[in-house]
Every structure is written in C-alpha cells, then in structure tokens.
View 1 (cartoon, one colour):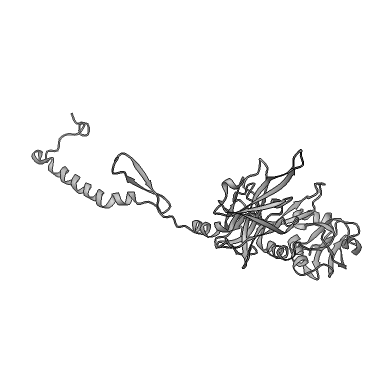
View 2: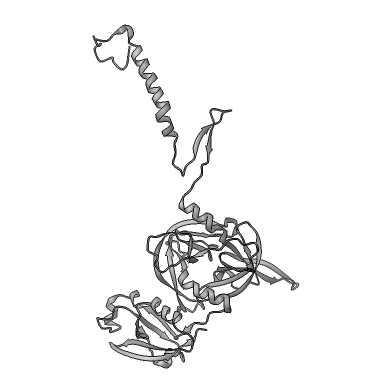
Length: 395
C-alpha cells in the first residue's frame, strides 16, 4: 500500500512500463544542479565567519578554518594597540625590621602620545600613579620599562610619564573632541582588572558630551571641582583608567578616567576630552605642574536647575538664556574681594557670553593667566552688575 496516493484513483494516462525513467532523470539533473550551483553558495560564509572543511582522515570530523577578517575596528585596534600600555604603581613599605619592601599598590593604563630622540611620553590618570615610589610601564609586547613622573594634576586627573624611547616604535595620533556627536562610535582600549587582561578592547558610542561631574577631593561633602568629561557606554572597568578612547579614524579623543559604580547603573563611563587634556599634558610635560587662574567660587551651570528657579529663586530676567550661579565664595579669594555673593549669576567674562561652566573655563584657562584682570558681568536680584577682579592661582 502506498501512503502518498492511497486516497486517489490511479492515473489512467500513466505509462506503467517506463514509470521509473522520468524520476530517475529528474533526480540526476537536480543532483547536478545542487552540486554545481547551490552547494557552493550554502558553504560560502560572511567575511566575519569561518568556513567548514572535512578532515580527509576522518570524514565525520568538522574543522573550523579561520579566514582573514578585515573590518574597520580590527584595523584601528591593530594600529592603536601598541600605543596603549599598562602602568604599575609601586609603593615601598617597611616591615617590622624597617626594611623596605616594594609592593604593587595598583595598576592602570596609559597612552604613548609623543616620542623624541631620547624619550617617549605617556599620559595616564593622576589617581593611577598617586603615592607611587616607583612606576613601571608594561608595553604591548610585555616589555617592562621604568618610568619617570614628569608631573601630575589632581583636578584634571592627568599625569605625564617619561620612558626610554629606544624600544618605542609608535605613538598615537591625537584627534579632537570638540565636534564629537552623541551616537558616534568609539573604542576603549586598556587593561581592566590588572595586566592579566592587558590590551582589552571594548566598543560603544558617545553617550553624551560636555558633561560635568562634581569631585569632592577632601571628602567634606562639598564639591571641590567640576570635571568636564565625555560619557560613553563602552565598558570601562578598574584598570582601564588612563587608557585610550578612540574614534573611527584611529585618533585619541579621550583619556578614560572613571565610571559610575552603582548596582542600579549600567554602561556609564567617563573620559577626559582630549581638547581639554592637551594643554594640561603640555604644561605637565614642560613644567611638572598646572597653574590655573583662580576665582575662588563654587559654581554650577544654570542648565542644572529647573527654569522655574531662574525666575523665582534667582530673579533672573527673561532675556537671560544661560550662565553659571555662585553656590559659595571662599573668604579672601579674588571673588570675595570683588564682592561676589552666593546666588549671583555670572553671564559674561570680558563681555563674552557664558552659557555654562565649560564656557567659563575655556575663557579662564585658555585666554587668561594668573595675575590678569578680568571683567565679570553678573546678575543679583534681577540687577545686572559689572565688576573686575585680579585672578589668583589655583592651589
């Protein structure tokens, strides 16, 4: 009994004598087509996958044969990875017999950004090398070099190291962070969780630009500084600090610095924009320290508070579109001597508009020096006031 035609009457026109010939010919033709046309297309894979071959000695065993993978990310990593290094903070401790013992106090990452005839220069984070008695740099080929600390800066969280340049072949190309757009793809390279995972690569996007993060260095509950950062969702973990944030042109656009470490927070990391870092790096390399013009105020951007507070609390007129408000004034500071008070709103420096903290810093740090006079325009109780002050030095 046949299963396929058991419910249908026989075909009176079928030639029973040659009924096997036509199916046989069709089977041969279909088999040839499968072998010559369809099978190669089935076995053909995307450039990012492997191909499957049979082992001639054991036909039942599949082998994965790797193929060349050429994507933009792999090309960037190949170019940039040799310029990203590990940084080891070594501190001396005395035992019971007061004998010095060197121990590893922490590890981080760094980026080789410059080389001259004798030395190569590495930028990393201040908190990576803070308190170090010795510093070692681990190259991508596992070579370990002694490093000299040229200078570091608490407020920017940057430090510059100098190493022997004879074994250094590549330096990273510096890009620009000014025109970065939210959503732009980026790559983070560093050494998360120590040197065991050195050269780790993560991918993400720019999640935000011109962010400001309050920093409380002396842990007194008050912000001592507002750090200007880029926000990214590229994975940044302990040990990534000081590593590179790279754009799709294989250029350094940020120095990875921190992340929000809370159980409820995922994928929020921060990087120091290279445009902000570059002048600080240059100054640390040349002088070992950063001397900043100083106002003596704790300030916040107006954009951080609801618009309702602009009019009801700060009494600002409707034509004020941005600025920074003074939260506190240090005694005997330039701002105190110039008469600034709590809740004053600064809108102009030297008649140039100030929309936020970043605008203020650009004028203060890029156009002014310690000892210069500066004109400040601010609002108090709805009244526009002008004053001048002589800039002090940030301690």
